[in-house]
Length: 428
Image (tube, rainbow, N blue to C red; front, side, top):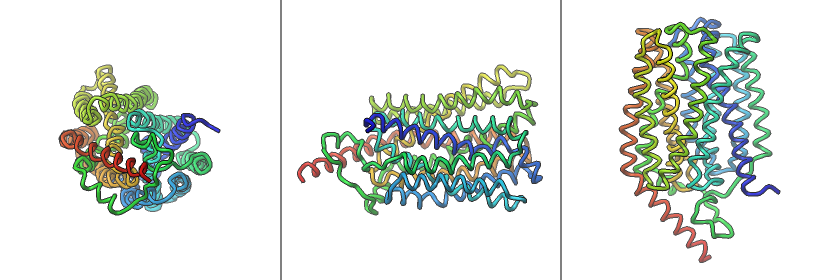
């Protein structure tokens, strides 16, 4: 039988694979923008609608998935999400026309709602003092998936076509569904909380509407949800338009794009873990620590991106250095947002709480590609990337400041509630 530490690492590794391969499939469409647009004769705006369609579907389903994860066995639901990912990707691979491709890609948003259950389950394997690092390590898989997708788009797709690449990534989703079904075990909600360490058996906490209403009584959650809308603008714009920007407006060929974006994606990956690590370090000193790290990353990312995009053509060394700095700091917020949600919400409604944050976040994610495409059609991709990204980061930084001012009280509420529950369990 595996040790508790071994079980933690196994689950983290399986979830790492899930995020890596799922993000490869999801983000592959960005590097494949060129050949897909050529196949269907798409404008920037029409391509933006393809991305937006999947985001809208995922947004609508987030509250439902969050509720299901808090009510039922999370590993089985995650396995179902993985199977849906593979199946819907196959549908987009066989779509013969733009309307059918648009509809098929929209269905791929169904499984994008899997992440709240994944992080909720991890919160029951890793305690508060280690969650930032665990989440940062897991989110490291997101840019790695983007890198894998980039390599597939630039090397494999020209040889076998973009449709067969989608067949490959869809197959991996179906395969991973079986790995999760048999390889990941459920845990009691709240099992990793320090208040329950001395208990022989952790009480079974189940979803209730009273507990769900507590989410909205936490002021920090309001700020976190609001920043989610604007905070994802830069990510979606850069993900879906930056490759085409490098090719069309800076004159990069495929090799130059790979040489530039390969290190960028690796630095983004490092930035996720670094952000989670710094969040844990500063959280140990002050309960505001995670959010201070998140706010710093957002503001630095905005400054570095402005300097990057204003670098004249021909100054490619300066452009790359500034782009690398942007890539390193912009992920700092992500692991700390998830960890903060779990720092202020009850264990039995954490999937619901994170789903609500993603629900709001996806409205911003759905808006950004279409907005950027509209601006790009009238000005340039560089203007679209810079204007939409800086707007999102500026608003997000202000909202993070609000969360910094409220988080101590909300963390205190959670710890007191869990301590009362542990005391009641000892008396029984």
